[in-house]
Each structure stands twice: as C-alpha cells, then as structure tokens.
Length: 213
Image (cartoon, rainbow, N blue to C red; front, side):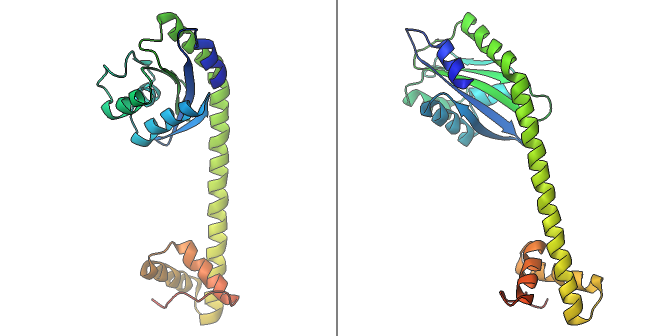
C-alpha cells in the first residue's frame, strides 16, 4: 500500500515517497515504506518524537508542510528533512479506534507538491486501508497480550518452584520461603523471577544460590 500510494501521487514534475507510522503505547514506529529514504525520514521523526506525521497521527488531523525551509513548527526535524532534499510533507491520519494511532506520510523533493486533489487521493487511500490496518493492529495487540500472559505464567511457575525448593531445604513454610525470595530480590536489586531462577538453577548445581537476606 505504501508503494502504491507513493506511485499514485508521483507526477512527472516530482517524485513522492511514502511511509506508515504507527503509534502504540505512545511509542511511534515505522511499519511500512516505499523506499529506504522514506523509512529514514520516518525513523528520524520517531527518534525526535515530533514532526508533521506524528502530529497527524496523534491529533487525527491532516498536517501539511508546503515548504520545509519556510515552516517553523518542528524546526529540528524539518531542518533534517530539508537537508535531505525534502521540501514538502503531508501527514494523513488513520482512525484505528482505541488500539493505536497511525499516519500515512508523504514526502516530496518539490515545494508545495501536494494539491487539494492529491490530498484527497491520500485520504481515499486511508479510507481504503483503515479496516485492514485496524485488524492488523488488533491482531498484534492480542499477540502481545498472549505473550505477556505466557511470560507471567512462566515467571509464576519459576517462583513457585523456587519456593518449593527453599521449603524443602530450610524446612520452612511457603510464606517464609516467599519472604526469603523477596528479601533476596531487594538485596540484589533484581526481579523476583530472576532470583527464583537462580534458586532453581542452584538446586541443579548450575548456579550459585542468592545470598541470605
């Protein structure tokens, strides 16, 4: 879609590049691009966390920069873009409900390269692809939630195993064994799961046990 959109807005007078920025958990990332130059321009915006395309995604409003050399809204980023030969930028937002925000971003080496008609074409691309992108983001969210749950279950399993080992070694209660782990976690300034993993490893003779609190 990014390649098709760039090709569709390119004219004999100026070439257009396109990229898609996705904002999840307030963190921007470039997820698609028509060329490496487009990816670098988007990545730089994400690095400085400001620019016309990020603003479009966050505000859900179209943002147009007719000339990067004359616009003072994002001076650091526009100076970088202008230094790379980009003179005009168009950011068009995706409406993705509650999962995330996104922007379809266009870059041109010509000033004032995007007419009202081409902006309308950009909006049409957004309308055509919003449902597909919304579904892709939702699937990614579900996969992330599943991974978080799997990690939590693995962590709990490791902690429970360590508690059982300490109970057997020290003839103590479950509560006392868990308190031991928590104190060792505080002393070492490590996550509880990492301390538990060290206890489990030490029971197998592959690692030193955590120090006594």
